[in-house]
Every structure is written in structure tokens, then in C-alpha cells.
Image 1 (tube, rainbow, N blue to C red):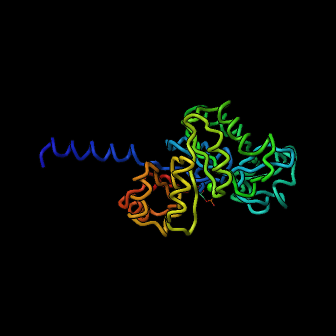
Image 2: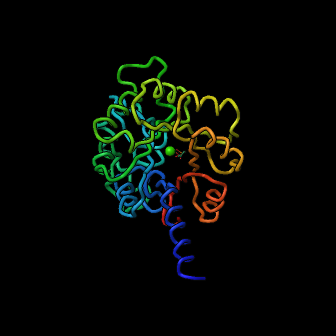
Length: 258
Ligand code: G3P
Ligand code: CA
């Protein structure tokens, strides 16, 4: 192999890597307590370009990062998150369940996360479906998330995702310039209804779980200008299979694998 050929391969590999999105799922979740500032900082220090977090509302309508509807699995509290005020939640420990080493980690607010990112890290904010309120109050989670993004970040550095189609519709109706939306699905093939929904709401990406993905579905979404980013990929061999099929990005608990 001559030097020019090797250099061409190297350039191609670098180009592929720069196009592939590796998203740190709930922060650097494999080694840190999920959805905490220490997990997001660890992902940032690893050099990933985007983190993912889950958000919902507190009783006094602040936005906090936590995956489950209840506090029991990832904190020393219990019961529904939405039954607690931010002040109550800030007293809880969100690190010790993972390891005593992380005792003292707190549940962060969305604003805390943007302060940590400091414009150097893109963010995928997943609005949990439980946070949807059909009466659409002035301080709905969708409106508050958008307002926080506009105040604390740049819309092009953010993706807002949800499994809840009504949340996506509501965000799309706001017509925020450059704001990217992603529709999450689980155990579903890309049928006409999903594709039409995503086209109508001008989503940036379709984010399905990887087991049901096929090259044809990926091509069908991409043919409409919709990127495909799949979750949650925690094996190098699975990541290779997904990228070989043509996905644009993966969510992973262990970004070092990729
Ligand atoms: O955004 C991908 C992934 O986070 C969706 O599933 O349950 O981990 O929030 P889950
Ligand atoms: Ca999530």
C-alpha cells in the first residue's frame, strides 16, 4: 500500500468519525450515577460532543434531570418526583445508590446542566411522557424547556426528544428557529404513520431502539431528510452493526467503546 492510499483511508476514517454522533446516555452512565452533574462532566471530559438527559417537572414546576417517574431507584428519597418541591429534591442524595464514592451528588436542574455545559457541549433533552399536561398551562414543561434553551444555550446545540407525540407536536407548533426535535420510539417498525408524523412535525431525527432497526427503515427516514439515532448501544459489535446499517448516531452508556 502506498502512502497516498493510506492517507486516503485515514482521511475517510476521520470523516466518518466526525459524522457519527456518539451521545453519552444520561451522562457517562456506565461509570457515574446517571443524570448527575458528575456524570455529565465525566462525559464532557471524555470529549463527547453531546450528552443526553431526561427531564420532568417538580411540584413547584421547576425542571429537573431524572429518568424515573419516582425517586426510589436513583436517590435516597421515595415517591413520585412531581410530588416534591425543588427544595425537597435538592436535599436528596442522587449518587450513593450507585457507589458510596458519589455520596453527596444532587439531582440537577436543567439550568445546572447548561451551566456545566457552558456552550461547549451539545445536549439532547428528553422530555418524559409523564410530564405532558393536556391543558397546556403557560408554564408547561415544553415552554419552560424551550425558554431555558433560548436563555442558556443556542437552539442548534440542542435536540429535544420525546416518546410522547403530543409533546413533539406542541414543540413543533412553537416554530423555534433551528430547534431540533427527535421522535423516540420503542419496539416499533417505521411505518407510514410514524414517517408522516415526523415529516409533518419537521423532526430532525428518529430515535428508535436498535433491536428492531433494519437498513430499509434507516434509508426510508433518511430519504426524508430525517437522521436516525439509536439507543442504547453498549457493545462495540452492536455499534459497528448499527453504523454499518447506516445510522447517524448512537446513544451509549460507555462512549469509550466508540
Ligand atoms: O434517548 C434515548 C433513550 O434515552 C431513551 O430511553 O428509557 O433511556 O430514556 P430511556
Ligand atoms: Ca432518555
